[in-house]
Image 1 (cartoon, rainbow, N blue to C red):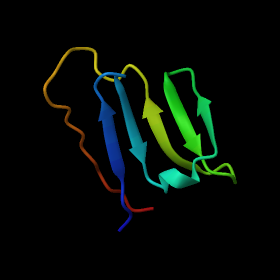
Image 2: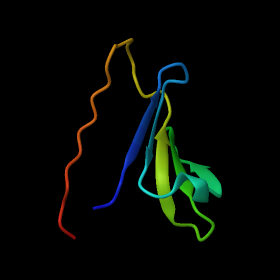
Image 3: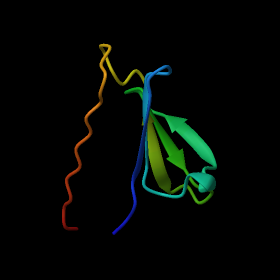
Image 4: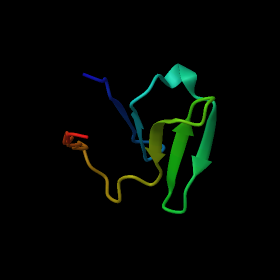
Amino acid sequence: MAEIKVYFDREGNTLTVWFGNPEEEYVCEETAEEVVLIKDKSGKVIGFEKLNFAEVETERVKVAFETVAV
Protein backbone atom coordinates (compact mmCIF):
# COMPACT_ATOMS: atom_id res chain seq x y z
CA MET A 1 0.00 0.00 0.00
CA ALA A 2 1.34 3.43 -0.92
CA GLU A 3 1.98 5.99 1.78
CA ILE A 4 0.29 9.38 1.61
CA LYS A 5 1.47 12.32 3.70
CA VAL A 6 -0.91 15.19 4.45
CA TYR A 7 0.18 18.46 6.05
CA PHE A 8 -2.04 21.39 7.01
CA ASP A 9 -0.24 24.69 7.57
CA ARG A 10 -2.70 26.74 9.63
CA GLU A 11 -0.58 29.91 9.44
CA GLY A 12 -0.03 29.66 5.69
CA ASN A 13 -3.56 28.26 5.14
CA THR A 14 -2.32 25.52 2.82
CA LEU A 15 -2.93 21.79 2.57
CA THR A 16 -0.06 19.77 1.12
CA VAL A 17 -0.51 16.15 0.03
CA TRP A 18 2.44 13.93 -0.92
CA PHE A 19 2.00 10.57 -2.64
CA GLY A 20 5.64 10.45 -3.68
CA ASN A 21 8.91 11.14 -1.90
CA PRO A 22 9.06 14.84 -0.89
CA GLU A 23 12.84 14.75 -1.27
CA GLU A 24 12.37 14.20 -5.03
CA GLU A 25 10.63 17.57 -5.50
CA TYR A 26 12.15 19.28 -8.52
CA VAL A 27 9.65 21.82 -9.85
CA CYS A 28 6.22 23.22 -8.95
CA GLU A 29 3.49 24.37 -11.31
CA GLU A 30 0.55 26.52 -10.16
CA THR A 31 -2.85 25.92 -11.74
CA ALA A 32 -5.71 28.39 -12.11
CA GLU A 33 -7.58 26.87 -9.15
CA GLU A 34 -4.95 27.82 -6.53
CA VAL A 35 -3.47 24.33 -6.64
CA VAL A 36 0.27 23.83 -6.97
CA LEU A 37 1.39 20.59 -8.62
CA ILE A 38 4.65 19.27 -7.21
CA LYS A 39 6.71 17.28 -9.72
CA ASP A 40 9.87 15.21 -9.73
CA LYS A 41 12.73 15.59 -12.20
CA SER A 42 10.94 13.46 -14.84
CA GLY A 43 7.80 15.63 -14.64
CA LYS A 44 5.73 13.09 -12.69
CA VAL A 45 3.34 14.66 -10.15
CA ILE A 46 4.37 13.48 -6.69
CA GLY A 47 2.16 15.82 -4.65
CA PHE A 48 0.06 18.94 -4.62
CA GLU A 49 -0.59 21.96 -2.43
CA LYS A 50 -3.97 23.68 -2.11
CA LEU A 51 -3.59 27.38 -1.40
CA ASN A 52 -6.23 29.19 0.70
CA PHE A 53 -7.47 25.84 1.95
CA ALA A 54 -9.69 26.74 4.94
CA GLU A 55 -12.21 29.54 4.58
CA VAL A 56 -12.94 29.76 8.31
CA GLU A 57 -10.91 29.34 11.50
CA THR A 58 -11.28 25.81 12.75
CA GLU A 59 -9.63 23.61 15.35
CA ARG A 60 -9.57 20.51 13.17
CA VAL A 61 -9.29 19.79 9.50
CA LYS A 62 -10.92 16.58 8.30
CA VAL A 63 -9.50 14.79 5.29
CA ALA A 64 -11.15 11.68 3.85
CA PHE A 65 -9.60 9.22 1.39
CA GLU A 66 -11.28 6.85 -1.00
CA THR A 67 -9.55 4.09 -2.91
CA VAL A 68 -10.51 3.06 -6.41
CA ALA A 69 -9.40 0.16 -8.54
CA VAL A 70 -7.57 1.12 -11.72
